[in-house]
Image (cartoon, rainbow, N blue to C red; front, side, top):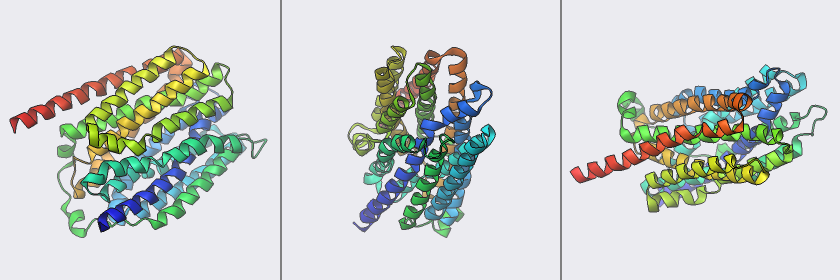
Length: 397
């Protein structure tokens, strides 16, 4: 009972901290491509700053995991929030100076902060027993519901706050949100690994990665983020290009974020009832619905429905992949297993985000959506293969 109480308290701290972190990220989602397009001489580079966010996330993944293995979760998460404050300051300065590359640097620093925050889900799992693990991951990501509602509203409220420097106020807001997150994290209580576990090291990384379950968890997270980022990143540009205004784009991204995080309150329960692989398969089917809705038209309703389905599909696939990954490593192995997973996932995501801007400028909105077909089909095949592999293993036993 004591373990469960501690787990729920830590989940609450992580959930509220993630809410502030993700609200800051949601502000950037709404504004980054538009600011990039305004500052870049070559408009094909409009999504480069946002793409560099994922480069930052990728770069931070392994060092953040290693630092937390030695210094503890609270220390590592606090450093991440402080980097988020620095990122907001850099982007504010970039808008004031009209400097595209400084703005890109600020986005990369947001990525570093987000790379640290991505580990919240694993921290929640470590504080929970087996029966609560999937729910803990899901509930922490549920903090994004606040971000879904607040992110777009903060962006709309702050976009003209420091006129004539349009959007600068949005990045001041990012500084404040990360500051609140840093304060909230001081209530986190997750014991660090023992000296014995740190010294043990566990199995070699290659042995961990070669497990079929690890590979499908990794590919599931890659598919979840790459399809979602490719479509979402290009959505504000596509909407403005089809004569919808900034508030319409913010509304669509807001509902996309609701789709990403609101299901978290039931995803853990669904995994317990239906099985993790079936929930991930549901996510793939929702991605297909998103692509179809976007290809059928460019009215606000098409953008809204597609982005909402995209968000729910991401939630099912990503929460499922995260829960699946926790089955594949021992406590002493968690830093390298988690770090390698997020490093690989966000490397692919960075390419998907940059590719979204290039695809849109060169081939149009339909090409962006069709780009999501291949990863969707790939993870669909992988999930069906793992289901069959597990049935064969169970039958052989």
